[in-house]
Amino acid sequence: MQDRILIVDDDDLVLACFQRLLGRRFNVETAMGPYAALDAITARGPYAVVLSDLRMPGMNGVQLLEKAKKVSPNTVGVVLSGNVQTTEIKSDAVYKVLDKPCPTVILTNVLTEAISRHHELCRTEL
Image (cartoon, rainbow, N blue to C red; front, side, top):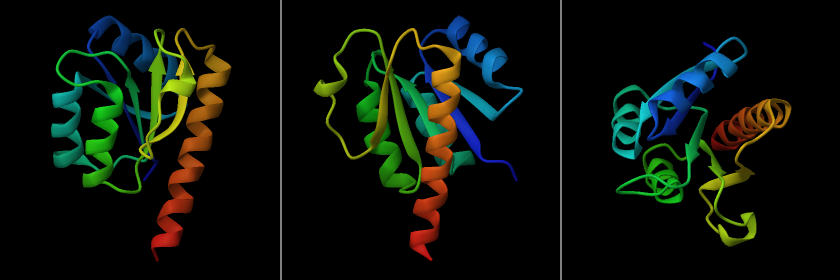
């Protein structure tokens, strides 16, 4: 089975855009907000990668990735942020922080790297 990527945002138009942009290259699922993402991770996980917006109501992207890591330790977290310096985000649950908007080529390269990182984590577990 192809590695799955869960994309999380609180804007359905952004999710639809990511689905169109990345859906041909990756196995993409989307979740509307952090609580729907946690439900998806619990019910349909694990995911190789969770790509999350930083600012969402109720829980930010870093908090989501930290909770996801507890449920699925080999999942690799990537945060998209238009509001924060990348050096301000410090968490073991975050593999990379990307500025928003992010060029497609950079986003696809980072997702490919994150999937490789997921494979490494799964191998070290054996």
